[in-house]
Amino acid sequence: MAEIRNDWTKEEISEIYHKPLLDLIYEAATIHRENKDYSEVQISSLISIKTGGCPEDCAYCPQAARYNTGVGVHAILPKEEVIAAAEKAKAGGASRLCMGAAWREVRDNRDFDKVIDMVKAVNELDMEVCCTLGMLTESQAQRLADAGLYAYNHNLDTSEEDYKRIITTRTYDDRLKTLEHVRKAKITVCSGGIIGLGETVEDRISMLKTLSSLPKHPESVPINALVPIKGTPLADEARVPVWDMVRMIATARIVMPKTVVRLSAGRTEMTTVEQALCFMAGANSIFAGDKLLTTPNPSFDSDMAMFEILGLKPRAAFKNGKPGQQEHVQEYIDIDKVEAN
Figure 1: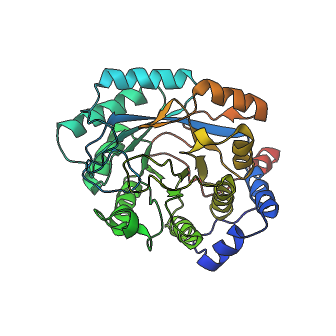
Figure 2: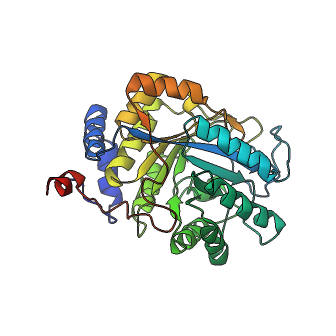
């Protein structure tokens, strides 16, 4: 049984990442199959509830106000539109709705009040609710928790060493502090990164070390492939080879055995065969629906066809308990042995 560790060294993670590819996939797949529900894939839908005009300078982001990317600025959506989107996503097989707002940080104002109402409303649909709203204070995280928020996404994006090359308007410590506030409020943590930013392999390994060294592993780790957007500083970056995605997913699966590893942005450029390799290597979550905030994404129908081919099934909502009562996903319980006794 894979041991849950929070003390991986960069050298150990590097050794895993650089294994011969088929050996790496085999090891990750073996660990993944120790989970009784390895064929289940969590389907999430991501919608932009407030688009564009962000004051940050994230080099990959089309919503930054300083870049001319053709993305317009739109005020926060009405709650009714969000509920309609959630109902459509649930009908398509999604068990989680993630709501994203192009903010640097949450502010205690009427827009945040509206988000709180949205969280409560989506909860009533019996869906897991996730938000990605930028930096949070302790009190704001607690307010979201009280409203029933299940998960909060706040990606590290890259390594601490590489971070200033990608973003200068906040620090790596700012990111980690928000994750602390989320964890303290007993909201599950969703945090991963992006590959294809021009980072080195060492940066990727460093990011995985940071994630796996948190006091508790994130319940969800998205692995994104950069979608280059015209008008951003990273517009001319080459597409990430699928083998790099497979290596990242497999390495994440090995060092964080019980974490949900999310095959995220970049899937529109991947064939079914390439995605199948990612699932084999340990990915057990995707974003479905036509868009990821402002970038294209495969449709629910095409994903369901892929699931049929690969023998995968959607994971039900609240598999690890309701908000604030989630079981510790890092603690392994051998259900077969329990049932046998």
